[in-house]
Amino acid sequence: MTPQSTWRKIDDYPLFVMDTYEDYHFDRYLKTGILPLPPGFSLPAGGCSCFSAFNLPDQAIFGRNYDWTKNIPILLLFTHPANGYASASMVDLSLGFGTKEPSWKDPRDRQLLSLAPYIPLDGMNERGLTVALMKVPKAQAPSDPNKVNIIFLAAIRLMLDKAQSVDEAISLLGEYNITFIQQHFLIADAGGNSAIMEFVDGEIKVIRSKHPWQISTNFILSDNLESPRTMCARYNTIDRTLEQTQGRISTEKAMSLLKDVSQHGAVNTTIFSMIYNLINGEIDIAVDRKFDRLYHYGLNMQK
Image 1 (spheres, rainbow, N blue to C red):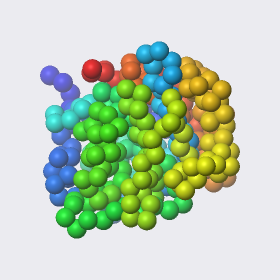
Image 2 (image 1 turned 120 degrees about the vertical axis):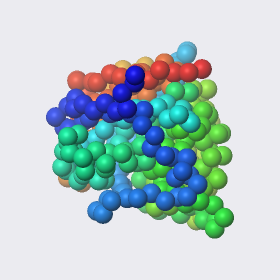
Image 3 (image 1 turned 90 degrees about the horizontal axis):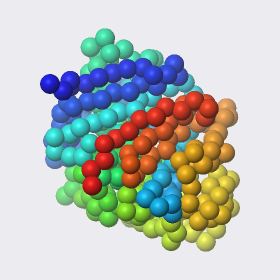
């Protein structure tokens, strides 16, 4: 019999890994938009760097740095919903725990951890659909009184559970009001497609890649399509590298690129760096800019 949930600590940062087959009732949430958040629960901001690259044979790479406040508990979460795609996602546990390290032995902590599927920062599903959020200076999503409201983190769960392509993900998001949004999304799939989805002045704007790579950091790309490199040094570094290689980049080189644009400052520091391989399901994680010590995991991919 498959255990409902497993929980283990793998790094003293701390980084945890959780594998769950439990029903987190996401379909019910999509009908009601009601999520019982506990007192003191907050939503993340964060500054990040993210890119997709597709131009090596049989390879699709998605790289991501999550930059925010240092020494927060983080979680690599594997979910296996009965009515959706299995996925791996990263969760910022400070949203519910602050800097406190959660304990699986504490019933109150376990109850709070049951919300983890609703608050992913990024992730990849078994069909290769991958998505990440990045903070931007402003965002305003459309609002339709006839649509259900879902928080922007749950929008990532929606895409991971229900979409297998960029087009499907964009279509799904259009069926809901996305609330508390201060971010935009980079979405990619195993077919080599990617798009940045932004929420500007009550409209959804979709920027599709013109190259076998795409980059997103922390500015509104739809307002700066002519000169994006001038907006962010991290964007500039990634774009020059991927232009030179024409999107041909190995997993190792991709992690090295994340190292080049990682942050270590008084406000933002790189908490974790992720490489998702959208074809074979391999996942590499570096924690707290320790790029010489990687954690390797995998997701069983379904064609």
